[in-house]
Length: 363
Ligand SMILES: *Cc1c(COP(=O)(O)O)cnc(C)c1O
Image 1 (cartoon, rainbow, N blue to C red):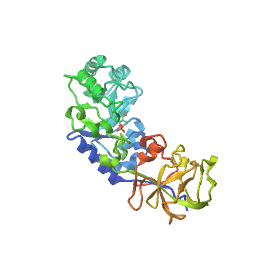
Image 2: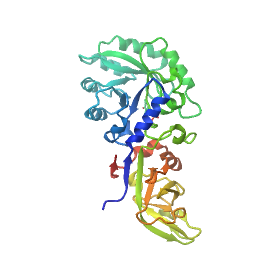
Image 3: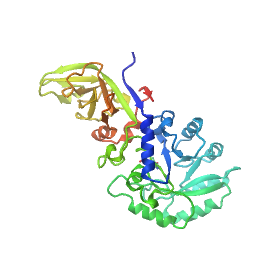
């Protein structure tokens, strides 16, 4: 028998979350962000739950090829644009839309031989300071693009640095409005957090929203709001089983470094899941976990292939009992990935993207 660990991708939850985002930004079209292999879910595995999207946005040209191979004929957007001039040939062949964030990308377009003009999203740097044209240089870039026979329509976009936090988006929205005022073309501003928090504002939602993390059932602004608040459902469950049970006496410890020591007699379980499966090694004692759908906690250090759990809340648990590391248990109990991530000092994004290749995945 293989190790009992496996991940499950919930297509119906992906569909539900996508609709939830659509409802949050009424009238806007939705780019489902499938970068990083659909946030660790696997593009092909997430696909059945995401096909109601209006387009797919990603970074890697090989990922764009995979979306086309699934039979998708609609829009695909390269969020960082092309990395080298020859990438434009693939854009022509696969009909990819691409972001233009710097002058070099315009130079490459000007030199590109194509029959079919390409759709581009001109990116404004409104304060994130990763990619995009400075506000004062946007109009010149726009005029240059519009004059190129290689370019069809020019849309305008920007990306928020603080949509999930207290600083929020007002200042960057202001920069965007002023820099783009009067320019023709579609607009795209919102990631998940901005779409959920400000999608009711027509100027903010624009023509296209770009949600990623919320589609994958993680709250973009946890712990301020959890997925229940936003009406989102977990799309990935990581589940395993207990493979051993131990009875600790006061003074007994568990795991490497003996970081947890019992102060009374307790039963503990050993689950077949460790950091080599993508579970965060930095998760401390007390990280939430479900055993037979009952909420309990991890104990001691996470090993490569195993971790220990407190069985005091689950006295009937035995080897073979279900362990839910995040997601949904067989009984329907939910453990949001955000709670596990917060306990380990990270965010849901990182945990889902880190799901290890050795974990079998079912849809
Ligand atoms: C990743 C990304 C998004 C999606 O962000 P989430 O926080 O996951 O919703 C949107 N736009 C751009 C440009 C991105 O790189």
